[in-house]
Length: 480
Image 1 (cartoon, one colour):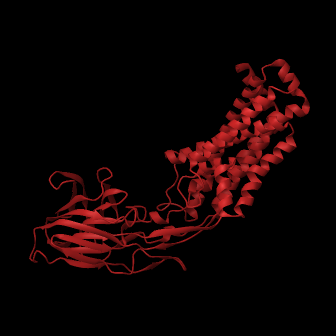
Image 2: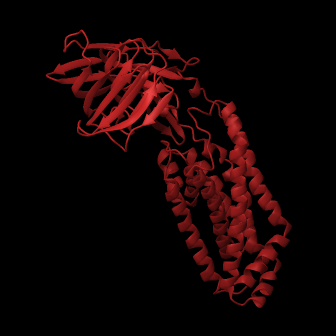
Image 3: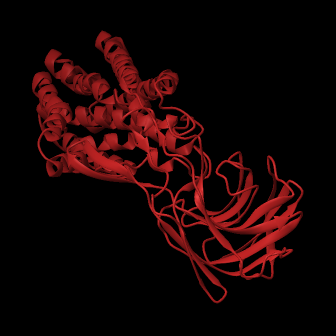
């Protein structure tokens, strides 16, 4: 088998069209990715960098002290809805604060002045006990499952905290993106505020201060509406005021808005709908033109010139010959695809940043990120599998023109037709045909995704196995 692989490697590398096809695959993938990055612009990063808008149930805290409460229930109004305890310099939006909160999907978080964030233990959600203890400008947060055994979350320093501050409970709930498919690749939607609700009990402020024990006040900490370049308006909160209802020792609080900074504590997460890695790899479809040609020619060129008889005379085991061709082809195309993917990613990153599609809302993709690495390696694997699929079709048809036309129609024409037809047809094509393998480039979930990345790769593997299996069967049963 080693001799057969060496022979096929020598044969493939001795043909000038091999180098041309590999260079074209890399060049087209990188060039189209570069052009796609140049054409992508956004202003989502121009949204409010800091957000300080929530319902605040508070009392005055003079000097050092603590505020404790159990978040008994929290409505799952948004993944980053926040309910918890906070010590704040005043009720004015933008004043210094330290907050300890629980979220429906992201556990316990501690935040100071939209500058520092600390993550609590595990995937804790309500019910959970929370406590903030102040010592000057330093505030320490604790969490507990039972109100007896407490775990320290962290100690953060407030930017500015007067002797007389406000301490108590807060509720915030950020907006959601509501999207729907209006057609293949056409997503319509809008950003809508949400209102969260939480029930607190075992609320305690120490020292209690001069006010009566039941003299808690509700204030809507509100900021002015922000417009980010007409006609985009970022609404961080509902226009409805928050509410407070007390039943015995339980506080039921509703509120909207958010607390934090873009890229921190989940602020802006609902605006993140741009897949930077997929955008960088958008030239893969064009690189497939060269990959398909190379895969087909790896077999049909020998049939056209008649050298296939010489090959089978030197190596009578036809299955071994085809397996050697497959190994050489896969290794060569995979290496070229990997080089193309890494180059495209590194080249397009600064362009995307310049065009407003960068941090903090759109983090720079790193090859050290397992999801990004999966997309890059998966794209190279997809190109190699399509080359292998093309090799199988070349064996079955034996004619270069026929095989190339069939494969170009399958991988290039059919997806274009599907995109201008209907949602159902487009979804089926991207889910149930070999083109599904390109889903491996996805690094974030989007509404129009027809199949998961690994699911799409599995579909392509299935088609490739069938084509190659048929090629092995046919080649062993007909004349050269």
